[in-house]
Image 1 (cartoon, rainbow, N blue to C red):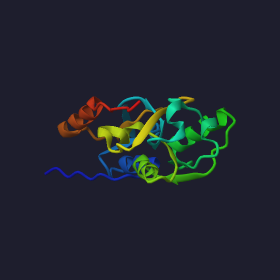
Image 2 (cartoon, rainbow, N blue to C red; image 1 turned 135 degrees about the horizontal axis):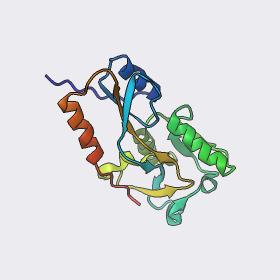
Image 3 (cartoon, one colour; image 1 turned 180 degrees about the vertical axis):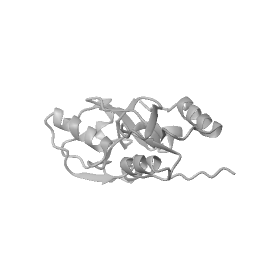
Image 4 (cartoon, rainbow, N blue to C red; image 1 turned 60 degrees about the vertical axis):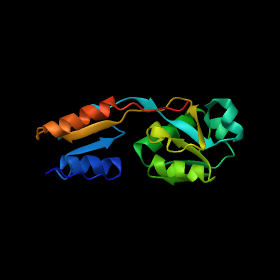
Length: 178
């Protein structure tokens, strides 16, 4: 019997659960610095901005932190590795990240953006299959790399099914919409 459980959890909780054999596999955006784990990078991408079609920033093509001053932002929590990387990008440009609605997942951010709550600074993975056809996506600079990886226990061999699942994840092509 195969049992699949999909949960969205904070990175450290995923790492802890896999290390403690509570989960067989986890997908995280940050390195898993735990000697009990092995990890494999799945792909490389970068964050982007999202806003409703017709927004004044749509014509820019590439968005910098200073372009977002005065706009309401929706982004990943500053306490997460992904959120810290976004914060660093703003700091590098000398811009304070203000008026932020912090969420735990980019899907939530894009749902809020689609309903007019602000501009999203998100990962590209939730744009697969054009789940948000009323949004426009633009590159964000400075580049903030995202390298999701699968983590699993070092001492527990992967099953054929788990190995196949990981290989399938590596083959998924994301439709980055810009």
